[in-house]
Amino acid sequence: MHQKKFTIIVWSMLFVLAGLGDPSHAQSPPPGYGDCPPGVISTTIDAPPAGKASFRTIRLDEHCRPVVGPVVTVPISQLPTIALNPQSRQTVLEPSAAGEQGNARGTTTYYAEQAVHDIVNITLNKVYSSISFTYSGSQIVSYSAGGGTLTHRENKPPSCGKGWKLKVQSNMQITGGVGLPWVGFVQSGEFKYKGLFDCSGTIYYNKLWNYPTVYASGTGSCRFTQEYRTWSLLWYWTMACY
Image (tube, rainbow, N blue to C red; front, side, top):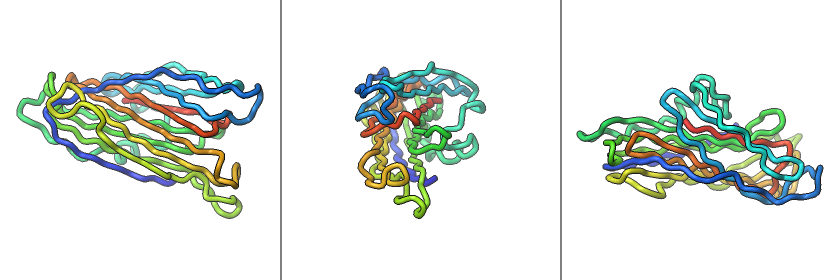
């Protein structure tokens, strides 16, 4: 498993979390077709209370229609592993401290994770995010955003390629900010594949976006989007917000 990190740190006076997006439908090839044509799926999960984690699983059926699992909330210690175990998750995701201001009511951290897995539960692509922020109840005081990506590699030989490779990643603030009631971010990764299942390197290309938003009330939400060039019916998609 190959891992890349990114980090941004910003100081502010306001901070808020918002989420959006419902699962969208993909195109429909003939029943039983092994791969699905290009499509985009989005879903939103609200951040649960402290100490809890909310997660969901989405698959595509034989008609390439999303089969959306329910949002399940469990203690963080019971969160199904999404490429990182709980100990690694805490160490890798924790961003640099945001620092407090005199009018702050609290400081907390939210995490967003999404990953594509294959039929034997190997994580193929993953984007993970963390947002630490200080809030006053009406404003975001400061924030720090971090995260990174994971990819599954193959040995060459016997594979004709090295498997999944990260092509592009980003970490940006896109809305709100210090002194406002919320702040929102996007962390993304684009992944291409060349290996045992496609020696041409032209069939599979996945784009993952995490859109975590945090609020001056100390709450948050996570929107997740997945865009794929070709989707294998042997894959499934997981996401978690906590």
